[in-house]
Amino acid sequence: MWVNDNNPMVVINKLKFTYPGIDGHPPPGSVPLIEDFSLTLNSGDRCLLVGSNGAGKTTILKILGGKHMVDPDMVRVLGRSAFHDTSLTSSGDLAYLGGEWRREVAFAGFDVAIQMDISAEKMLFGVSGVDPERRTQLIKVLDIDLSWRMHKVSDGQRRRVQICMGLLKEFKVLLLDEITVDLDVLARADLLTFLKKECEERGATIIYATHIFDGLENWPSHIVYVAQGKLQLASTMEDVKKTSNLSLMRTVEQWLRKERDEERNRRKERKANGLAEFDKRIDGSRVIRGDPVRVVNNGWAAGRLNSTVAGEENFIYSSNRVIRQ
Ligand SMILES: Nc1ncnc2c1ncn2[C@@H]1O[C@H](COP(=O)(O)OP(=O)(O)OP(=O)(O)O)[C@@H](O)[C@H]1O
Image 1 (tube, protein in one colour):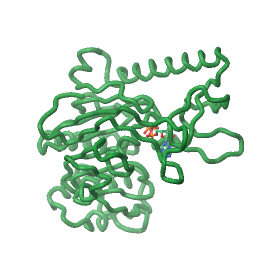
Image 2: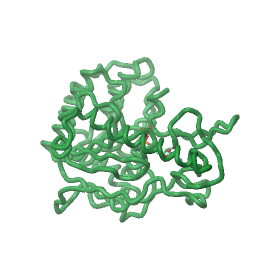
Image 3: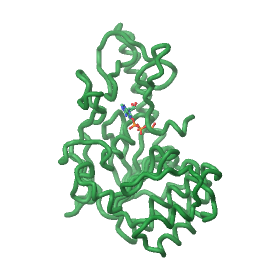
Image 4: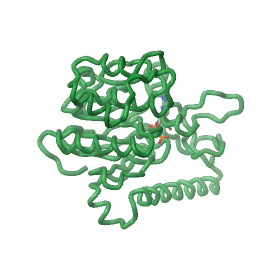
């Protein structure tokens, strides 16, 4: 946690979360996926959320965006709980961009199919209560051709329209879950510049979860590193740069390597002690330690899949699965 002003934009206070089972409650014996996670962000902050696949980044963003219920005191955006106060998203004050982007545009409380036979113009001009100048600026930044038909454009072009839709309203807090993956170098650079300006000029706050560090060196004001659902580091970029003379990408790579090596050593020890090398998982939870042997090693890192039993198809991937396909 860092500087606390009087009206923080985002406050996460000892967040604890387990994905509910079919009865809506955490499965018996489950260990929380996210635990003891606290963070405060102020107006103007641009926070990079980093961590390995399955660390819990998307889960945290979704909780902030009101997509999962938690105790309202654990997560406050603009002083409110997004799950309990839907006006936060419907007003556009809180925007979430990411997730199931191939199927929908999740923005300001409405979902719009994004692959149907509709023009970009119709989509972008169909949103009411938008400042026309802002719309024109965004269309320019994202280099959108208004005559594009959404069912015929490329993934990157479709993505640009999705991002444009998501940014039309003047958000106060923006949650970005790796949305730049299909963008070409220029579109990504221009978008990052636009977003930085939104924070500097309007005092917006952005949390951006990503694995792509190209062009990000001077973008974030803060960085948060999460591993296995737990906060490892929350720091200003200035402080990170003081302690590491490596590039941002190399710095994060170093953290992740250390995490992976520690995890490998832990697994080795478990194996040497006659225990299952990998922890057993209960749906939606992190791990159950010391459980009977059930090796879930299919070549992916621990915790990536909830089952590798032959013939079972019920894999649960972390959110950026589309990127890895
Ligand atoms: N709906 C769900 N039900 C149960 N478990 C889930 C669900 N969604 C994600 N998980 C599990 O939660 C863990 C964290 O997933 P999450 O998507 O938050 O990770 P992430 O850090 O965003 O990963 P990535 O970098 O791969 O996107 C993973 O182990 C995943 O299997």
